[in-house]
Amino acid sequence: MPTVNIDGKDFRAEAGETVLEVARRNGIWIPTLCYHPALSEHASCRLCLVELDRGGWSQMVTSCCYPVRRDIRVRVHSEAAVRARRGVMELLLARCPDSPELRELARRMGIEGTPYPKVTEAQRNCILCGLCVRVCAERIGKAAIGFAGRGVNRAVAAPFRMPSEDCIGCGACAAICPVGTIKLRIHEKEIEVSPFKSRMMLRRCSKCGAPMSGEPHMKLLEEKAPAAKEYGNLCPGCRRKKSAAALVPVGAKPVTPG
Image (cartoon, rainbow, N blue to C red; front, top):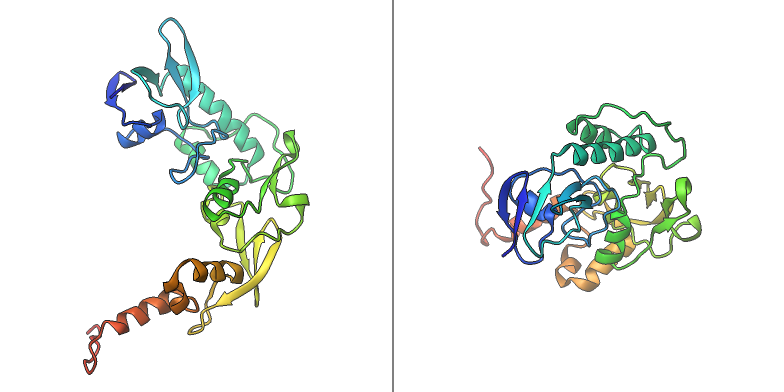
């Protein structure tokens, strides 16, 4: 197996691993926003830049998608690597100045602000990492959203910037968004995926009335998983209560906390 020398220490790399995966497995922190182990590599945020030693020269590489196929030497905390990541974060802070998640990550990197002018567009907190786009396409299989526009006008949107007919209201995009730009808004009978303005019927728990998910998402689950047909109308809390009650033998009194 090849080794990765990170800041003077050798670490074994498993087959198919990237520099970022080797570093994480060995407790070495490299900041990143667009990386997720369940999705394909994208290298769009550029925060995971490290310096690769090529012998007589070096180059910056994105550690999240640089495969370890042979012995290599990497510098995570070199002056050049730290300066490159700092420049990327300062640009992100200019685009997303109001994001508490981004500001917290910046503080962890030792960055308190940005020298660049701040943008004012509506989606100013979106860092264009693409996690929402990839999870919708790769894991949900819907591709209801994608990238639109160019340059400073680039944004994540549904086709033609209209409410998507393919959105099932599963909330995966909101769950994976690292800066909280995407939110699920619960209305009386509908669920809305903001800022994409996609709306669909909301399924509520038949027992307690708690909001659950979009009706198209729940119907898809019931088609894919037989068990969902039995519990599909119950929220997680009521589902657990029903499962616990089913484990109590007939005639036995359920044990209650004293």
